[in-house]
Length: 246
Image (cartoon, rainbow, N blue to C red; front, top):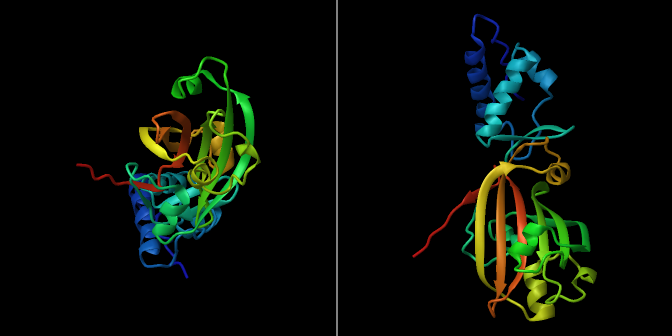
């Protein structure tokens, strides 16, 4: 049972109260009273437990979120962050393999898949003429049941006829190899801290303009042809970027 921490109105400044609340909740996590992905008590209960205002409590919860210790889901509440996934962008693995190798459980949900007119930035990424058609696949990816990644895949349809009729919950990397005899070659990465666009925040159930790690990946095949690009929006508390290069 979580300890009673009702001691914050007794002369503590607001910032001191915020620090004390952060230390108390961090202690619950470190002692194992709250495990990974466990839900924290409701804000109303926490406010009473800490004998503080909702404003002060939310400031403390926001600080813990910024530290990557807890996360919030819209209309569901606050949860304890699980361990981060080690992510090496130089390794040519795919999401499901990367997650399983670290003892975690991956899952992929297809939000939609369609043949569309490519936006201008996608035409540039794929080296296509303006207003060309591309395949767009939008997916939501989970680790241990938690939605952590919203990704938009844009594929040059010349290389992947009929792919929209395939099982797109599986690895595209494996599908490319088995169905089309296409394997990844060189890749170009761009990483940028940003905020979630509305489509991503809705899918991940986070508040609009929540912080995100935005990764753009432009892929070539074994022949050097640009075949697809991925726009990935990760929860910023999900990844530990770990790169070793010679």
